[in-house]
Image (cartoon, rainbow, N blue to C red):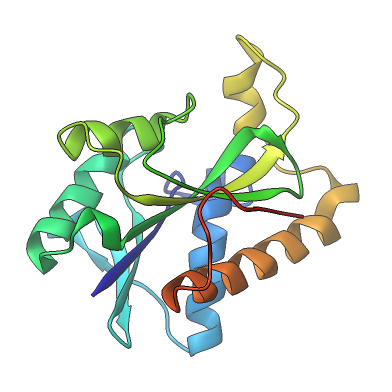
Length: 182
């Protein structure tokens, strides 16, 4: 069994923000399957199982994403190597995508929490979705909680669609970590 986790913050206030692009990819994938995620309070997530894959969106805030990931992995007995985390990355320009494996969090607090809850293990896959350029320092927090500018609407829609295709390719073993996509 595989686990695909999209990171974001719960609530309408955060919908369509840069930080929630991981949620958007999961929602896109589930919509294509004709299903939607169910709230699972004991897992602290919304999730849905489709054809041997669990798609999840933690209902915790971003910085506590690891709690939900840990609970789901323990309950379903999922190995870290079968985990793909889909998340925003300010170090990549908007429109860029990159897979990685066994790497540090790069300042992404949701990923940091997942690493911590997996006892420090980084041996899981990530699809990093560019939302940069990084404004740096104290401006970063507000930046990732902003919605994308209107002139990037089409670009973001293509980015979510391409990300969902790459997730499907990962499930089929067709993606090499470290590969960058535009």
